Image (tube, rainbow, N blue to C red):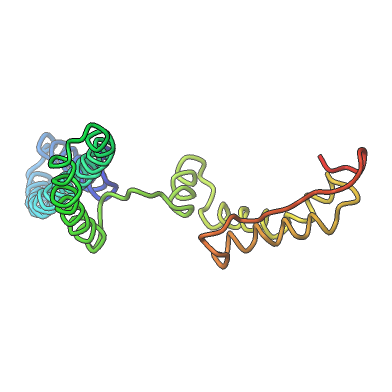
Length: 214
């Protein structure tokens, strides 16, 4: 959350590049013609810099607000958890007035504030901060490091899943039916068509010693 968002990084890079170009042009005025051209280009750069700096201010403001909202959300969650931990102790000690206040006033108020804040965070368009990183974002980062195209990285992952049963059969002999069932369960999970409230799969491997259960 403390790392600069990519849009802000890009703007900082563009500003730095233009500032360097401007400095180079300012020091390069050997002839009158060169000086005139440089002056024209410097005016263009100044316009671009003004636009970029305004965009930067806007992005920084949004980033700061998003960070504050997420930090506040985390703090509220911690407060709710702390009060819920405190509640059984108060009840066991017979402090029912304090317990009642936590159960019926403090926790409900915090939950309401938390839910409203969560809705605000989730409904925000073009968010600069993401709490969850998906497969495509990971592939994008790896692509930048390795110069391997993103689509190839994602395609490799797809192929591994599609060829899972064949790969397992090369390593596990005589258990084709079990491998197919496991492979199908994983494919359903990756395709998000399984029941999210149930495990990916439940299997019983039966047979006498030496049958290859392990």
